[in-house]
Image 1 (spheres, rainbow, N blue to C red):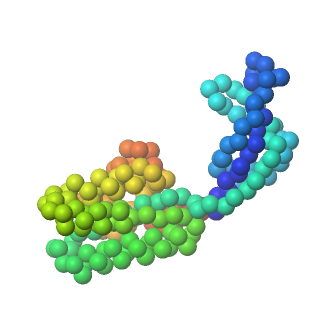
Image 2: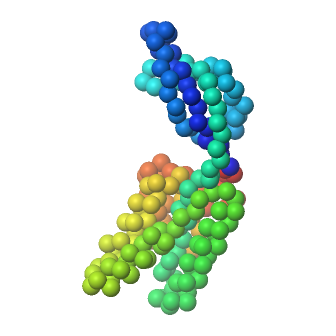
Length: 180
């Protein structure tokens, strides 16, 4: 799992090294940076080049990537509830596999379906169109990437296109997802 570190830094301004500020930042550090020690100095960029000296390191483990699982929902089902549920089950199994790998999986269906049900119960006849894909795209905007599974699906392909437009990672199998 990625390690986030609570790092207390003394920032040394290039203009006046005597005027250093202390600040606490939480950063995701690459594996190779896990060996940083208090007192070590490294370069930092905050609008201009600065150096920072680490005074305290505290590790705290967190979940790896937040990944939207996108696959067929209604596609190829002819509206058959059992086949729709089979599609949801496939995305759920993939989500569980991601969780076991140390990632935080999400599915647009987890967010959209309860809202669609409530909106339809309140008489909104256009709830599916207004909620289903827009909410999945909103969730995706908070994710690190999307894992596209299953067969043909305009909706899942829309999530891939959205991820690419947002500069997010796109994976097409569990084997492609990097370890946390």
